[in-house]
Every structure is written in C-alpha cells, then in structure tokens.
Amino acid sequence: MKYPIGIQSFDKIREDGFVYVDKTALIYDLVKNGNIYFLSRPRRFGKSLLVSTLECYFKGRKELFEGLAIDKLEQEWKEYPVFHLDFNGENFTQGNALQKKIESNIAEWESLYGKSPNNDSIGERFAYVLKQAHKQYGRRAVVLIDEYDKPMLDVLDTGYTTMVDGQTRSLEEVHREMLKGFYSVFKAADENLQFVLLTGVTKFSQVSVFSGFNQPADISMDSRYDALCGITEEELYSYFDEPIKELAVVYGMDLEEMKEFLKKQYDGYHFSRRLVDIYNPFSLLNAFSMKEIADYWFRSGTPSYLIRLLNHTNENLNELTGRYYDPSEFVDYKADVEKPLPMIYQSGYLTVKDCNIRRNTFLLDFPNNEVRKGFVTMIANDYLKPKMSASNWTLDVVDALEAGNLEQFRKLLTSFLADIPYSMRRKETERERERYFHYTFYLLMRMVSTYTVYTEKQQSEGRVDCIVETPDYIYIFEFKLDGTAEEALQQIEDKGYAEPYLSDKRKLYKVGVNFSSESGTVDGWITKE
Image (cartoon, rainbow, N blue to C red; front, side, top):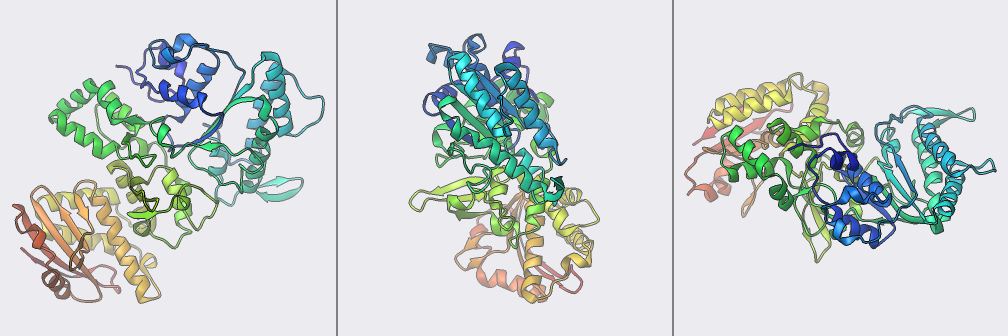
C-alpha cells in the first residue's frame, strides 16, 4: 500500500496509485448545497487535499474520480474557471511577503483573463479578473483559498513591524488590513462566483479579516461535514485492515489490542455534537508507513504562537481543560491575546469530548495521548524551565511507578522540582504559591498520564489530589504546601479516598506529600500500603 505522506495533490494521489480515503460523497453534498464556506481544521488534517480535490472536480476532470462515490452522483461534470490561492509554505514575517504573494497570483490570473484598465487596488483587480473569467467561460468562478490565516498566525503577537508610506506599523495590523481588502471582493463579485471555500486553522471573527465580506457558512462544527477531513473509525478499519495487522505483529499485540493502542494515540477528535471519532490522518499514515507508533503530528511543527498567547493569560492549562464551554467561548477568535482558548481548540490541541445538548455547552479536553504528551511537555518546559529534560524525567517516573518503586519516584520528583530556577517559583502571595505548586504537579502528572492512568477524582468526601494507576499498582496522593506529610496522609484516611479500590487486586499505596515554598521541593513524604 502506498501512503500519500506529504502529498496534497488529488491528481497525483489518484494517478500514482496512492491510497485515497473516499470523501467525494461529502464533497458532492457540499458543492450542491451552498456556495461560500469556511472550514477550520488543525494543521496536517487534509485541508489542502480537500482543496485540491475540489479544484479537480470543478475543472471537470472526471477521469480522476472513476470508481469513487461521486462518479455515480455527478452527471454533468462542468468545467469552471478556478482560482486557487495557497498560503502554505510561505514565511510572512517579512514586511512585503504577503503583498508579493497576492500580487503574483493576481498577475498570473490577469495574464489569463485580462487586466483592468484602471490603476485599481488588489481587491478591485481581483474582482475584475473574476468578472472577465465569468464572461469568457460562460460560467461563474470558483475560488479556493488554502490556509487563509497563515499570514496572520505567522506574525500574531510577535511585535514585528514594517514600513508603510514612511511610517512604522505593526505587521499584524498591515496583514489584517490587506487580507480584509482582498476578501471584501467576494461581496462585490457575488454574481460572478459559483463556489468559494476558505480553509484555515483559526476563525478570525467578523471584526477582522472577514469584515466587509459576505459571511461564509462556517461548517467547522457542522455535523453534516464533521468527517470531511481526517479518518473515521469505520474508514480506518475499512481501508487499513492490513497495515493494522502488520503493526500488531511488530508490537506483539493481537488485533484488538493494536486497535485500542491506535485509538488512544491518534483518535479522539470530534468536530460536531454527534461526537463522531476522527483519527489524525497525518500520524496514522506515518505510523503505517514507518511501522512505528510515534508522535508524528506534534513533531511536525511547534505551535509557537500558542506559547506566546499562553504567556499572556492568567489562566493555567489545568484551568482551561476538562470544562464545559458555550460555543461562543471557543469557536470564534476575536484576536484577544488574553483569551487563548479558541486558538488552542482550533489548532487541534483541545477538542470536544462531550456535549450537553440541553444547555448547548461542550466539554473540552486533549484529544489523545500524542497531543497530551507533546503539548503538556512543551508547556511544562516553557513554564518551569527546568535544566533537565522533562521527557526523559517522565519516562524514568513511569518506570519507577510501574515497578512499585515509590522511593525512586520521590527522588525523581525532589530533584526535578529542585532543578526549577528560583525565579520561576517566586510568588508574592500564599494563593499564588499554592496555585504555582498545584499547576506544577498537574503538568508533571499529565505528562506521566500518557503512559498510565491519572485522575483528579471527585469522591463523596471531596476531590482526591491525584490517583495514578498502573497495571500492578494504584497510588493515591494527597499534597500539602508548607504543612506536613502526616496531615496529607491523614486526609486520605479521614476522607476514605482508598475505599473505591478496596476490592481491586492491584497493590494500593497511600502517599502523603508536603512541599516547601521556601526550598521549592519535597520536604515531607510518607507512604502507607
């Protein structure tokens, strides 16, 4: 089986015999039921392939679709003038990069359809080209814009500037105005447009680049199109049965164990209230090709703009995840650096895990182990700035917990915390000190949870600070700051935190831990089997 890793051209995939997961029935439905759309999906989720497939369809290349679902649905196969603008692969941190990109595309289109006799703006020139294309073809134009938001994300909250008419201006502001002028053409050219699709990671709100433009139908959380990008579980088992079996042999698992392994690692995305499981296509295809399960998607790009945004907010990651939200809080991005949640969600680092239909609220959390481990480790390194590697520390901790070696875990935890610079843990108030230590332990245990089961469990007598489960052991932790380990252990006893596990055959440990805000590390530790 040939895997189209890094190949986004529909014609190349079909002509060269790469595997293609058939999305054409959904594409047919999309083009017949509307004409201006916006779709948000995380990076490397198949947006560019979707755009390429639509381009081939609107160019009437029927031969490429033989044997696919749309082959039986479409009867006419008309050819339309197609305008494809791809912002992928460009670096927009240079002052004139965006203008050059748009100018070069318009100049190419003008060579085909003619140039306006007037010295018009970029938007007006584009509108003229669309009108001329409509006249020459006798059919309205199709506009496909891939990763429309990349010029914004490249400079978001960077402070980069450029010179405009002798004045120093924010590059972020210049890009916003330029894109706003370019996209506003869709309103004036409405009679010349057959179909428009903009794809991207984020949806900037009406107050920014979409202003002055007929608002597109946002299908990012439309249940009709939740499987338009990515791979559903049904598609996974239908198209990739043999590769799954091959991976199972490599890892010494039976088929069901391997399916569960893949699910935990790469599944978990949901793009509508239907909660249809969507697997990350980039990671899956790489795993099948390399015959190794690894963090392919996360390694393929560092979301530096998210780190910048998280450094602005007063909310920690543990205060953002595992909560129900109204859609307005995470669907629309209003360019507010104090509220990073929409960017984290739309970039694919959080996803919908449940919905309350009556209240129209959605539970957001990490989609799978790949994202949880990569994102939390990255946040931990940025927040704590330890000298040692957080990833290596995590693996050592997992080894200690799976072996039942609590003394080794104590040493590892103590040394890691002591390794954090004093400047990072210096807090002015008692509340801030408690919040810092709570968040620190949250980050550390979230990294460990990729390999074990970690819960912050609400029980009848209160919330347990931390429960870690391995195949052979259960650990119940209670933490105190500037108290005593004895007090922490006594709280486990008084609250009966261990009672739900008394019939469990695994060995259970209760662990009371005290942290010192002065030393920044563990200064009290008591265990009880």
